[in-house]
Image (cartoon, rainbow, N blue to C red; front, side, top):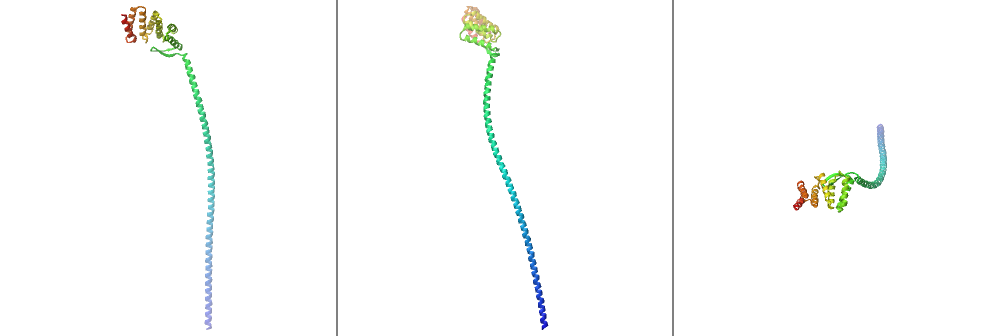
Length: 272
């Protein structure tokens, strides 16, 4: 009984030791597991912190870059505003300069217009003066020719005197004209009007001479038919009726379609 009891006690002790050892082992395993879990958690926390720090660093860097870009944009905007202000100032200055230049242009245009008008007037006066000394084309009684200014002046003066009925003065003026300008284009007309001035003064013989001179110098002249009729009139006044008829016949044969010929027919009928 004692041995059996002792054996039981011994078995119980051994069992107790085994249980204690198992508990100890279990405790060590749990502690080891807990220690392992703490390390993992610590590592995870460290990794998380590192990531957070990295993110913070990146955020700070991004924020710095954003601030730098913002500062650059602000500077660019400021420079742009300055440029715009400078450009606006330049535009205003340009407008002012343009307005001033326009004013100068208008003044210059006015002055130029005045100068041009003065030049035009001067040129006109010069041309007028030159016309007094230079030959010019004239047209009288269907003839066109070149005449000297003095020649034109003297002929027109003599004709004006005749038109005023100053026949003696006109006769003198035309006589002087034919003497001064023997080769003038005015000569046929001057002879015709000289004959008329003499006819008006009843100087029929001299009138016939000048009318004949016209016929000899220019038989195709516009005044030639009238000159023949005037010769017939002078002959009638001189009582040379036969000569007058002969002159009218010459008129009808030479210039049958002229107005002078129509008048001559009527005059011829009265002479018969």
